[in-house]
Image 1 (cartoon, helix red, strand yellow):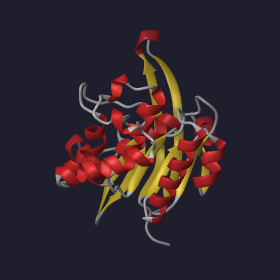
Image 2 (spheres, one colour):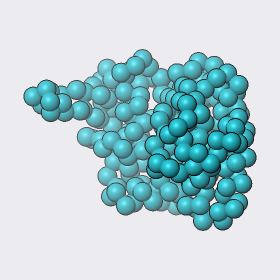
Image 3 (cartoon, helix red, strand yellow):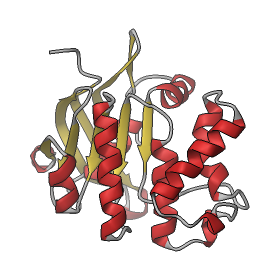
Length: 233
């Protein structure tokens, strides 16, 4: 078997509640797993088990208290748990994509530009980037009349489709997804299932939270039970 693109080992995280006199809230302890190219793995467990926290630790939004989160970046392996911020930013630009639950964008920037931005950041000519973004937004059934409008004015489901387009438009070998279909109707969930399957066939490794059982069963190769890490904490 090839080397994993993601290797998590011995990860621990505790939140300090400063407004509660420094109370400690253990999240995970001894978290460990591997993720390989071309597979989709779900983080499973009930609400509060630490799934979103673990995903944010892999992306580097949360620092870990102990352990390693190693991501293969070409010929180099980067430990997200200890790497400097600038190296983490480069890792996100080249290797690690993220589709969060909520779209965070600059005000007054149109949806087409929001979706195309990762491509222009990769050096793709603007005209080509906009064309590819438009094709993806059309596939996600976002009406063309909305493409020039800022997504802040959209419904939750419309914003999430822009969010998905932005997260999937550029090739990143490792893709993190936090409930990508939570705000979508049945038709658009099927579109996202198809897009995830295409990413897998292209060799992308996907780690996600999929509360929708239909989506999880359709795209995931296995489930990691996060409650085992929460028990240890």
